[in-house]
Length: 312
Length: 192
Image 1: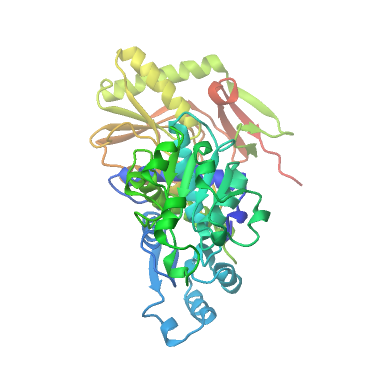
Image 2: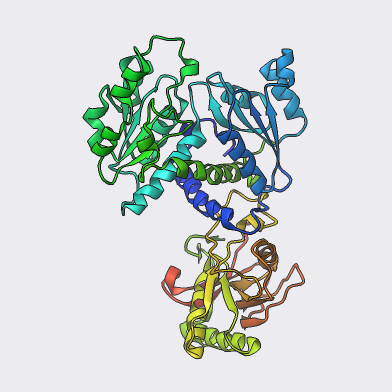
């Protein structure tokens, strides 16, 4: 594999291989020496043009635990703030002999654009409202662990509700694409104003009512209301949003007994998710975070472990 | 070449069996006794099989040792894929499982593999062990030693020594994965 720009770059074999290796990588966390030599001598630049704590840190830890040299570049305080273009910034870093870029950018398609310019391999760590493939992979990983615990194998026949601000979410697109490969059935739930245009062509069930689908779903994934991307007018008040689309204690009680809750974070407690739901026994939120490093180790290994994906 | 999933050589090659299931079992039994003799018992022993077929051999040796000594022996698996020195040069490999039964600190670790050839796998295994702890000693048990070493590594316990030419492939088949136990030699015919 040369780049990971979209979940559409994966197929069942590669997606399963990434999830399986992540299971092995998770146990590295409990070792005395948290280090594997697989990416010794490789240089990975994490370049984040948008704020991020968990994604950037987990990519950095993942690279370090695989013995790669990882360097973080943030747009603030870099030559970007002096007016350098994205292309020039990336070509400059590329010329230093970087092996891979992990890039986050506020523009949809930025990662693919960068991949077309540089020699290095590129991992999309979130591009605008487009995709965030490693988040979808860690979501799938966490769901798979949950399904195993309740004695089920695989995603076939599982209903996964993705609820909330779908319009501004890159996580939803990656999850829809990945579940198309893995076989889960995605149900999209949002107010009409927060549905992306063209959603009817995604091949998923779409609903405007959380209450109508809640008791049939095996996973309820709540998405953050992205206030920073909302100029206004998407819903009347936050309170009304919570009433209609929030995972309140009442809705928590209405879920299937074996169902679990996911949230890619950061959570707005009291808005899209109540504290009762976020901290519930069937909440997988912290498990998702814990899976982040393992999934990213697995992705980096699959991209950089062999010279296959490199440009010669 | 062989299909890694089944370890079965792909035709048209002439393959011959150098040890059948009976000889295979005798060799393993002797190896179990030798490990116990060298270690003066099963105390403090950990057997670690190297995937793929080292794992089954290690499980069998552990069962034999437990039988002889009437006490269970710790057994696990050690995948060395990420420690290989040819990792980059080859297509991406999916690493196997590593599962270590407790701490290896101060234990006598017996690495178990099917065929000892260049010695590079065992070299990588030493690196992998170093990241897991500090055993009191590391020993090596292999079912087949076929020579052609590229590193100064020797086995402590060997089931069968086979003089195989460089272009011959020595394969260990185990019933768990291959349907029956055997050691085979296959001449790999070079394409003209």
